[in-house]
Length: 445
Ligand SMILES: Cc1ncc(COP(=O)(O)O)c(C=O)c1O
Image (cartoon, rainbow, N blue to C red):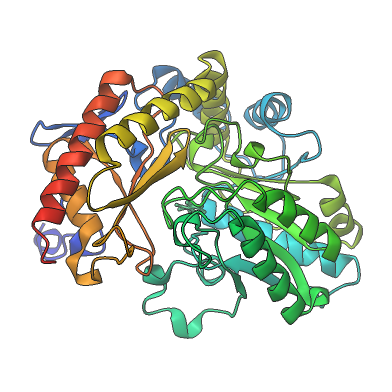
């Protein structure tokens, strides 16, 4: 007893994150230990696509735990077969038929990077080992995914050990160097990628890794319409694999099954997690063309599994979450509610003196707050605008997701469950507007 008292474990790891205690999650709402109800306008970490507390998902997990508690990831089980069959039937494009399942998004993205490198090595092109990332992006917490990403705040204390990955500029229409929303923005960003590829030497490049719509790092930034088709052609021209990180944007979040479907392109490798199991279990999928996998197999290389990859209970949760998404037509709902949300955000905030842009697709939306709307000057980092807005909204009972990279900042993201209704959207918008006004009015200009 004495020993226990002296060594109380401290969770979470850092004091700054130790401030909210949730005892229940149901539908689109969370309840704190003190009894406050919070509208989860972030779906957790933009994960809870079908909402919280679904009994059918809990039952699927329980049943599978009883019958297939743990089986090595390389063997088939009923829960794995059922999930892969559903993915093939309802979700994946026909050519992305090779499936590798990890627990989280970081593992998934890193697996995709390794698959790209192994693919080229297996085909006798080991020089193709560079992976191009983008300046504003997030791909995960491992050393490689941190390094390939463009999230400066998450590199603090690590930068000196991170590998060197070339970065192409992330399309950012609001802040395009040609001018805000310049009609040539798409060509500008594609041109920059082409010059980077040529400078690095295309023969050294294995893959280009990007989110189709930049998630929380940039705050739901949608690229110009001509960007993705031109990037797809560029990758084909130089034999570079296109890896799309849809950890956040996949499984309906942007109002389509996957974010890339907003444009006439298909990636070579697709990574999608979060909404796959809707937060009920840790699971992420890496989906690749047969032509990517075949040389790796022929060369006798291994795409190593993670011990908890394709965990049966997680596959059962995902299978049921995907069934719900289909049977309740929730992806279509995400598209139409996304339009409602966007319109109401525009009505409430587009004339706000400190809101530069309201953007996004489907139920992935964000606002960018600035000190000066005309010059797009940002508030100083020390003003800590995002966290203060999120805090001010939380006091009023709504949870939004902090966005930005430190360099890109003052971004607040919305990613609610697809089951929210119009009155929930009204509450979100009203509270966000109040929180932005409270914080910007109180910030020294
Ligand atoms: C686009 C993107 N990629 C990768 C990740 C990393 O996923 P995880 O936190 O599950 O490792 C995230 C997480 O937020 C993400 O948004």
